[in-house]
Length: 102
Image 1 (tube, helix red, strand yellow):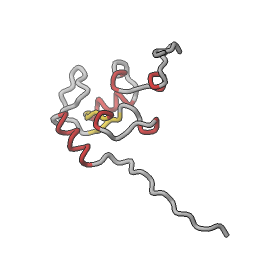
Image 2 (cartoon, helix red, strand yellow):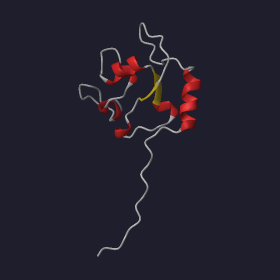
Image 3 (cartoon, helix red, strand yellow):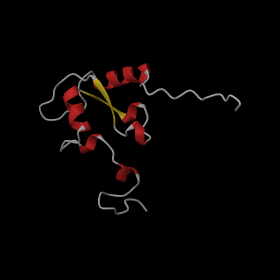
Image 4 (tube, one colour):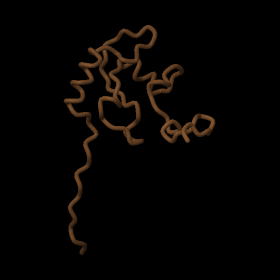
């Protein structure tokens, strides 16, 4: 048979507790989206750049949001574009395919 190989442990997907504490401190437990009519307490951590696209669990990539604003951002509701990044922004092109940097 094949020799046994050591498997690398998978990276944890959970946001470290130290980062969550700093996120709560930064937001004062209030929703950071501050959409019109929102004055709710924050309960969710939102990744600006999704982990599936290489985003990290760092404080600069996280927003502390209330459940309602998190749902609107996740569902790509109009007016929520500033709270997430898109593939075309990461690749340096605009939504029309034009090069942003040269």
